[in-house]
Each structure stands twice: as structure tokens, then as C-alpha cells.
Image (tube, rainbow over all chains, first blue to last red):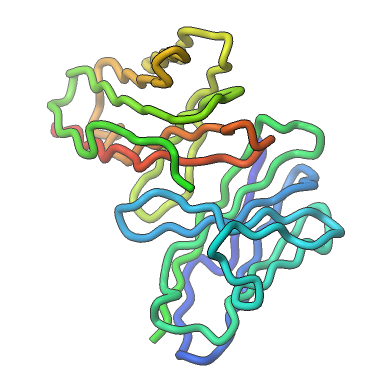
Length: 116
Length: 111
């Protein structure tokens, strides 16, 4: 089956620093990847849609300069949380949609970010 | 925005019992999907039901969709302790392949 990986699985960083999270589709090409944020015991909130070779589309209320997304290849999208603050602490999950198959999304295992 | 509302928010049952979770949504959809999430993990896709389907089965899972009421239900039969997880519905909400997730139901199956 289609596998999506995320790296790192957990990261702790200090306030003011930046942290990069990678999302990779391991056995398929993904034109589109999605980034979600999840607070404890809450649902997933879509942050942005990442399209290979073009700028990401951000959801309302998500700061594009705060959450930088780069989708440089058909198998890799990165989310960089810039100048992180404690309120950015969260579980970040990516998903990837196989090129040409709109109904399917495969989710990564998530990255737990803690900002101290 | 989150358009799916799930009920109940939490459900605790004994092993062997059936678990029913409901999901309501607000806009027209092309399909509705159910996902499972173990604590602190990613999502696992369970089942997709299209807007022109009323019922779908997969193993111990049964999903129904009522587009007139804008609601769906997920039934897990003969539950097992390993079914303990959070369950989310997600709709495409007409946005192509963007998904809008419901609030989720936390299911606990006691052995």
C-alpha cells in the first residue's frame, strides 16, 4: 500500500528557532500534499495545500510567513515553522494524494512539535 | 473550517458489543470517508462512501450515508479492545480533494 513518512517524529526546539518537518511519499508520486495541525484530543485542521512546483495554498487564518511550505519534488514536501513559539506546539500531520487520483489521501504518522 | 460534527464525542463499550458513531455535515459532498487514529499516531483510512451510495461494508465495518439528512454512521460490530482509537469522518465538501474533518469520536473498548 501507499506509504507516507514524516521526519522527525518528535522535535523539541527553543522559542525563536525554526524547525523543518519533512513529508515523503515513499512508493508513489504525489502532485498534492496537505499539511494539518492537530491539538490534543481535537480534530485535524487543514493548514495548507502543497502543490509540486508551485506555491502552497494556505487556509484562512494560517500565516504563510510563519509556516513555510516547499514542495520541491513529487515525493517530498517540507513544512518549516519559523520563529517558533510555545503556542506552535502541536501535532503536525501531512497527507499525500497520488497524482491523478483525487479521492485518495495517505497520511503520515505525524510529528510532535514542542516549543520550550 | 470544520464542518463535520460527530456524535458521540466519546463512547465506552465492552468487548463484543457493537459501536455506532455518527457524523453530520453541512454542505454538498462527492464522498465521505472514515478514518481511525490511534493515540499520537497518523490516520488510517477505513472506508470511502460516495454520494450516490447508501451503504458500504468492509469486514466488521458498516457505513451508511444519508445525503438528504447530510449524515453518515459508522458501525463497528463485535468490537475488540484493539478497536480503541479516535474515529473521524471527513468530507470533500466539494473542494476537490481537500478534506474537512469532523470533531471525532473517542472509542474505548474495554476487555
